[in-house]
Image 1 (cartoon, one colour):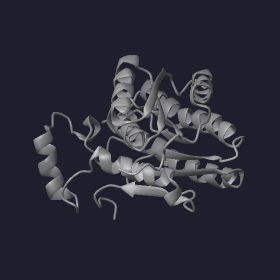
Image 2 (cartoon, helix red, strand yellow):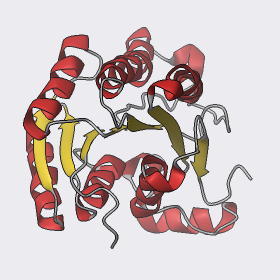
Image 3 (cartoon, helix red, strand yellow):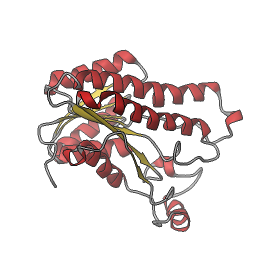
Image 4 (cartoon, one colour):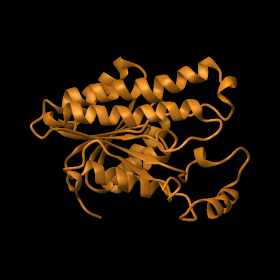
Length: 254
C-alpha cells in the first residue's frame, strides 16, 4: 500500500456503509486523517473505528448534506480537528424509484433532488470556500452514477436526472475553481457490490448470474475498485485531470 495521503485531511460523506465506507478505509490505509459523515451515528462510528484500524486517524460527524448549516459545520469541524481540508469525496446520495415517473411521489422526487443535487451544491460550496484559502488548494471527487449522462433505465428517471446534474455540476465547478487551486472530478459507478445493485427480491447469486450474462466484463464492480478510482482522482497522480467523469461500470456503457 502506498502513502499518497499521509497527513492529509479527507472528508467523505455518505460514509456509513457501501462505497463511502470503502473509500474512507482506502484513504486511511494510505495515511489520511479521515472525517466520515452521514446521518446515522452508529454506522459512522463503526467506519471511524475501522479507519483507525486501517492505519489512519478518523473522526465521525453526523450531518445532513441537504442542510446548509450541517454542511458548513462539517467542514469547520474537519478543519478545527485536523487543521485543513485537503480532499473531499461527496458520496452521499439516495435512490427513490423503481416505478415509472408518472407514479413517483412528489416526496420521493424532492428527497432525491434535496440530497443528490442541493446536497452536492452545498457541500461543494463549503469545501471550495475552505480549499481556496489554503496554499495547497485541494481536490474534490463527486460520486455520480452511470444512470444519468451515461445511461438511463426504466424506473429510475428521477434518480438519473439528479445524477446527470452531479456530472454537470462537477464539470462547471471544475472550470470555475481550478485557477484557485481546487481540482474537481467525478466517478460514475455502474453496478457495484452494494444492496442498491440488487433487483427486487434478487439474491447476490442471482445478481452474479445476471452480470455474467449482461455485462461485458461478466461481473459487477467491487467497492474497492470504485474506491481505487476515487483515490486516483484525488491524488497527485491525477494533477492534470480536471472536470472528468470517470466511469467504472464493467463495460456496461462502453
